Length: 505
Image (cartoon, rainbow, N blue to C red; front, side, top):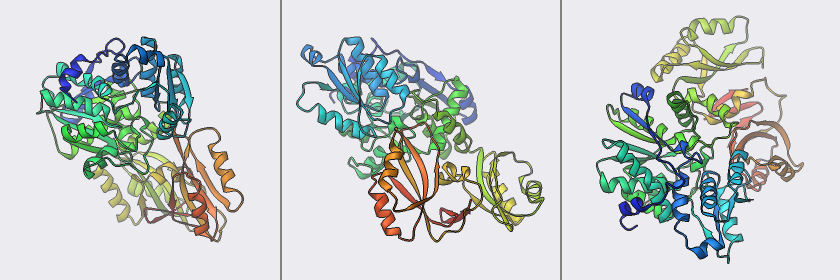
């Protein structure tokens, strides 16, 4: 890209976008011993920074291109940016979106007058359908990130940041396809090379981190969709070249850390951002603690706030774990009256119980699922040492997604003994008919012995499903043929093995 500073300065974004405030996060600053600032892109008219790049690209199109119209593919935020830009400039726009797109995003795009075509179960399938169905047409495709004009539009955030906080020392940027990171990093680094710029990705959607490590663009086999705004299997060609040149590093965070960051932003601003919108703060908090950084001026990007209301329940449940204030355990007790009271007296004293699940499963042993309020890692270690000292068998489930998403809701005693059971966690697209299609595919060859599903308000739902069979090879061949992503969970009868340890539910 030629002279990125001039391109950013010439970018036309303020016909539709606003210069968003840089909010000093007082509570976070006190808690970390740093000066933390939130760039409030969630306050844009479409509640996302995407309006900047989309408008800067579309406003530069020719009259003939305007007559032909534009097309785009997006899971939500880019779609809204394109739709509003097209409406403002008088363009006809067709947006391809996955069938799994939450209704709140579809309705927002439709409200701006764009035509919506629902294709596929994810962004990649919607993107491919867009290219195939518009092959041979003269419509202009508006790429969500891998385009010079889009990147320059996003770079206007960097221009604002240097005006708003000239003494900034760190900038943390969320990364999906890389357009935001590329735009901000190249502008800032040309003018202030001393500022460290760190990209942040979810641990299960780290396409940029993997590409930088490999020295070339890589395609991930699977991406997590909790932070759907950054869930891409491959970054852009142009964005990769810019990020490898200008970024000082890319780090990853867990979904629990993202949930904790959503809560932190709410407590400082009383606003609720989407998971991708809290990604950079989650990364900043991880980076500052890991490197023992104090007294620095830190900028994070609150990149968007388009979150389905239904997803908030999941966020709330995972917030305490992500902030290190809760730990989850399976604890074995003798099945005798007073056993729970004895546990509380000997080991739980001084800790609050945040969750408790139990149902009788045998006359000898009781298996309970319990959440414990803790102040941090040292407190958690002290609690576990207390359990050991008092002779309790336990398993720490705090970092195990299978336990957090399924086992905690399945306490209820063992099923009748069966010869052989295999458990799988299968990812379903969250669209009407997905489960029906899967069950129709299964047919009647294998008996379903267990089924647990809980919606998270995202693009994909996770199901734990058990099959009664002794022919494991035939079963896994069948499951593989469904084309749904799945992970096998070792099991025998009603015992679930989590990280190699048996958890009886």
